[in-house]
Length: 128
Length: 434
Image (cartoon, rainbow over all chains, first blue to last red; front, side):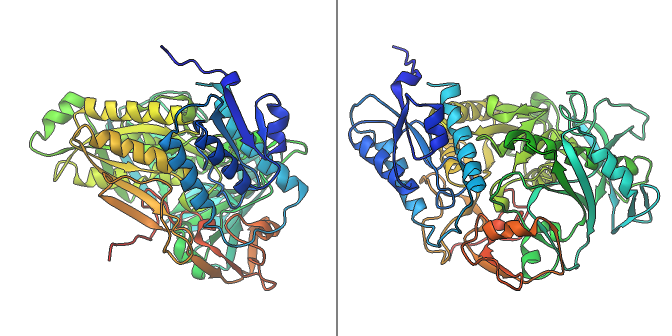
C-alpha cells in the first residue's frame, strides 16, 4: 500500500499567527512560547503522532525566534521512537539558550513569523 | 573537465577614475560600480565603501561575500563558452572548464537590512577580526537600499543579484592582466578517472547545501537546490560560481558565495589527488525541512556514492540543528554500504562547551572534524567606522539584551561573526579530543 498523505492527515502545531492564518484548518494552536509548542508535540508523539518536519527547522536558533511550527501526522498509532528522540533533542537544544533575548518590535516579530511560515510551507507544498 | 585558474594578487583597493588592476592594486570607478550594482528598478540607492585589513571598521549586517572572477580564453587559444554565476549572470552553460582569472585578495561584501533581526559581522581589526577570514581581504562594501514596500523574499533576491553584478563588474578588470599564480585542476569522466590512479583509494565528497526556505537558500546553475535530487558535480564547477549562496542566517556557519568558490575541502582533495588518493568528484545534496525529504535525499546520496565506486567520502554540513539529521542520515547510509566517512561540522556546545554539541548523533560518525564551538563568547571593541546599519546591533541574533554596550563594543557568541565556525574549514578554529 502506497502512503499518499494529504494535508487532511497533517496537523501543524504552532504559536505563529501567520501560520494560523495561512492554514486555519490544519493548525493546532498553542497559545504560548516555543517551549510550549515543543511540549505539545511531545505529548502528541506519546499518543502515536509522528513528527513530519524537523523541530529545529531553520538556522535561526530555537531560543532566538519566538515562533515555531511543526508538522505531525494526525493519525494515532504505536509510539514512534524516532519522533520522540527528535522532539526530545529539540527540547534539549532549546534549553541551551539561557540568555534573555532583547525585546522585539512589531516589524521584527513579523519577520520571524514570515520565515517560520516559509519553512513550514515545505510541508504543504508537497505533503507526503 | 579541466580548469586553469590564474590568480591576480590584490594587495590594496582604491577609488579611481578607471576600474583597473595596476601593480596589485584594484582601482575602482565608484560611480560606475554603483551604477552597475544598482541596475535593478527595485533598488533605490547603492553606496560603496572600502574596508581594508587593520582598519577600525565594522561591517554589519553582512549578507554575502563574493570573489571577483572572470572567464577568459585559454593561452592555447581555446575558447570555452560560459560565464561566472551561470543561471544568474550568464546563460546556464556548463562551467568548470577553460580558464578563469581571479582577483585573489579582493572581496565584494553586500550589506542590506532584509529582516529586522540581524547578524553577520566583519570587524577589520581587534578581537573579532581574528575569527573571520574576511578581515584579511580588501573589501568593497555595498550598502544596498531597495525601494519602499518590497517584501522579504524579493528583497533577498535584489541584494543577492546586486552582489553578483558588482563582483562580475570588478572581475572584468582582471581579464587582460597577467596572473601572479597559475593553477590547473582536472577531473576526468568517471571510468577514466578511476583508471588513472588504479592503486590509490577512490575518494568522493558529499557537499551538503542549506536549502530550507526564505533566507536559507542555495542555488546551483540558478535552480533552488531544495528542488533537486542529489546529483554529481565536477569539482571545478564551483570555481566558476555554479553554486551561489542565498543563505543569510547563521553567520558563523553559512557558506558565503566566496567560500563556495574557494571550497577548502575540494582544494585539499585536489592537492592529494594522484598522490595519496584518487579524487572522483562531488555529490551535491540538500538539507530540507521535512523528514521525508531528508530520507529521500540521503538514500540517493548513498546510492550515488556507491555507484561512483568510492571507497571513502568526506561529508560537510552547512548549518546547525536540522542539518545535523541530514549529516547523520548521510553518514549512516554511506557507512552501511561499507564506505568510510569523515564528517565536518561545527558545535553548539553551550557557552561553557560542556553540552551535547549536535542535535543528532551516530556511533558510525567516528571520524569527525569540528570547526569550533559557535556558543563561545567574545567581546569585540568599538570601531571608529560602522558600515551598514549599526542600529541593528541592538537585536543581534546570537546576542542578548545588553550585547551592545554604550561605548559601541559588542559582547556576543561568535555565531554572529561571518565564517567563524565555517563547516568547510575556511575559518581558523578547530578542536581536538582530550
